[in-house]
Image (cartoon, rainbow, N blue to C red; front, side, top):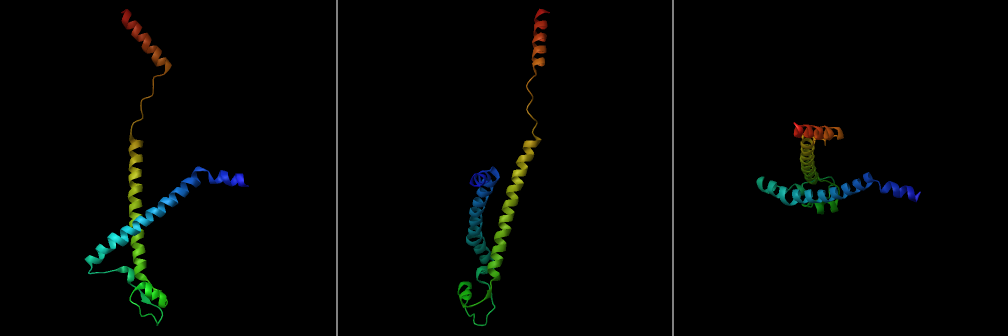
Length: 139
């Protein structure tokens, strides 16, 4: 059973999937930073200090906090600002992945459109060429 598991785990697809998941997690962290540290502050500056991350609706009557973290400690809240930030993260990730896939498809198309290299001459063609050259010298 251990041998079968090792064979399964070492198949190319499983290793490729593991690498993809690790790179995807790192890519997600990068996009989260881009959205939280670059994109959302610019959006906030354009819309007069708008900060989605602390927008929430209290669901419990005892919630009096003004920040989302403090409100969550006091009771149930509907954190729609955080949800909007996650949606923006998703849209940016989807757009970047779309552009990557589009670029890869373009490269594959260029490779498919390129003419194949000429085939090397067959033995018969080489022999006929030698016969032609010999006949041309004798003539």
